[in-house]
Image 1 (cartoon, rainbow, N blue to C red):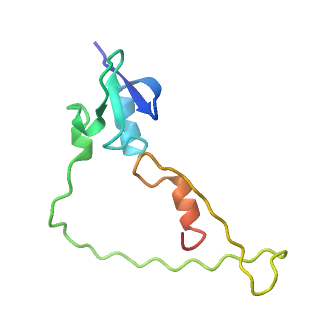
Image 2 (cartoon, rainbow, N blue to C red):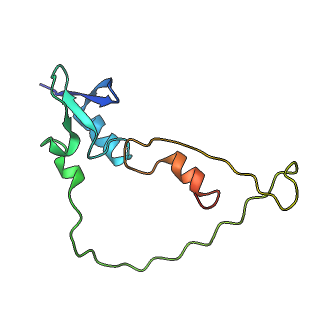
Length: 117
């Protein structure tokens, strides 16, 4: 018998998904250790890291992690200022987002690629 899983995001239930599909979600960063999941039809939600089928995906990093030299990325060029902004003035934007998965996604990478955020 195949187990089907559901995911609870802010009270909205998604699924059912197979175990394999949830494992794929985790590898894509779409399922975090703290994501609430349950077997289809169950009423008790548990964090993904608490389920035996998924706990191996969210193992703790050892206290002493070996250091690896990595190339330092080049700084991003400063974004150009739109023509309608008076000289000497900077355009300012406030972007507010509530990221529930605790993992960086495409939106966060896009924002930080524009400069300091």
